[in-house]
Image (cartoon, rainbow, N blue to C red; front, side):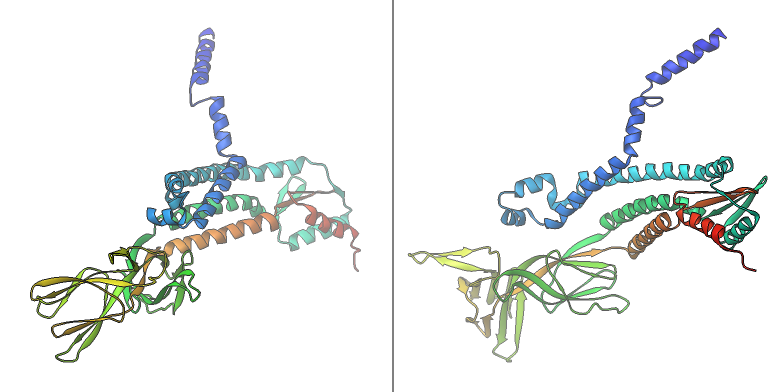
Length: 437
């Protein structure tokens, strides 16, 4: 006996010293992780970061933020606010919220499973709330059976139960929130994203056969304000068409499994080339360095198009290399090549250069968008819809289908449940109802 007592004391001492088993600190940590307070804190932080990710355009280059937020861009980049939803701290909050919801759900389902038997045993021990005579008792039994209540007999008492599944409403709601979080994470991190540039009047074709056509693009509206608006149309491989739709910064187009964002913009040169020999003419849109020639020896080297230029009193020219909007006074930087002689030239829209049998006319530059194209597997959206439907069902069951129990014996009845008022009204109605003959 003494040896057993000593072994028990040694075991208890070992458990009290263990960092995992029997530790009061670990119990407190576990209790906090599954608490509603912790869940609300996580939801608040996630909501704040989501608002920041909505107000601050995401995924832009450093130069864009330096121009848009001259004094804050350094802090934005250091804190990861330029890509909030892929930051380590946002993902950590999502994992912690998933853990909180999982622990809450496991504890709740365990309590719900034990609640049914406990409520029935408590019903059998409780004193009657109402005293019934024989006729009232018969009317109540008929009413309960007409309501399709589940009927069980225990000794001399009959227990009726209704909406037993209502105990699971809270669990279903917690489970749906957890599923919404998980499927939302899939929708956030699973999509494949590519960036494509597309000139107005042209289209890009994706790997699955989807085509995205750009009808038009503008940097400024009619009042000269920055607008960055594209008119696009999407055609899916099965033939479905979105029709002509407008996208702007932070106002993308969602169609099928695709989401198209107005991401960036650029300006391309436009040169019309005319062949004097045959009268042929074609307008070329140029985005890269290119040599325009018939024989590969004489022709025009296109280099770039710039927003404007500055001339000093001595006549020296400085090209302006960037602008926040449309090009106010576009200028082309080119080189003519004739008989092996390279001549630098600055040309403006409307001017022409003739080199041999080719005439080059400089047109107004073409503005074109850079599109961010995101593809999300369709199953993710289906799963999200299913999670929302499950949440709706859970909330409906919780608030409108509460479980209720009625015990009827030879002397009277007792009503129990989280919201028994409705059933009590039924009992009173049976007590007050006059028997018809």
